[in-house]
Image 1: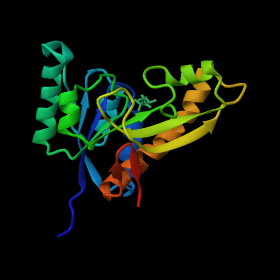
Image 2: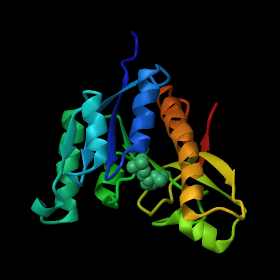
Image 3: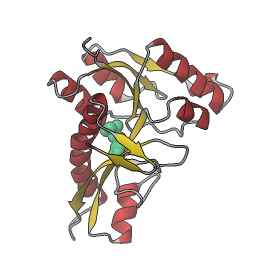
Image 4: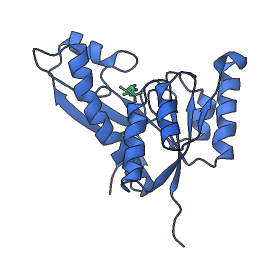
Length: 204
Ligand code: GRF
């Protein structure tokens, strides 16, 4: 029996350029998947506009009506389970998931981070890279574990840092790589080609 398209949820908080890259890769037929829902914690996230334009359901889960982080994540889990989501993609989602949510979807949550992990996890990665003086920066797609940007690495892409770089120019160059490797990682997941052994992800 033919496999059905991978059911994907994308969690966003802002402009949604990575969401757009994923939508475009699906529409080009590169990923055998379907975005069932886009979930946000910000009702003015531009990502919601992008979802709407492609007839993808966007749901705002308002943090202020949830008493705790646990309640918030349970609200998200309800949506994910209703939609039978198989892969959760964090794409600029500015909240840390509770261990409960992470463990419920273990091995089925990915994140994109604008640095070569394990360098510069957390906020302002591009600024930290410039200030540190690295000559090579980049982007990482990784599985999500209970830590911050710490799960097994799926794909990375490097860019050179030039003397002329500012946070903006470096961020822009890294973002271009993000838009390539995030859809690639999702494609590999949809094809069951990501084998996780401890910290290492093998791609047969
Ligand atoms: C990206 O730089 C991503 O690596 C980071 O947040 C940013 C989101 O950008 N996690 P966008 O909303 O996908 O444009």
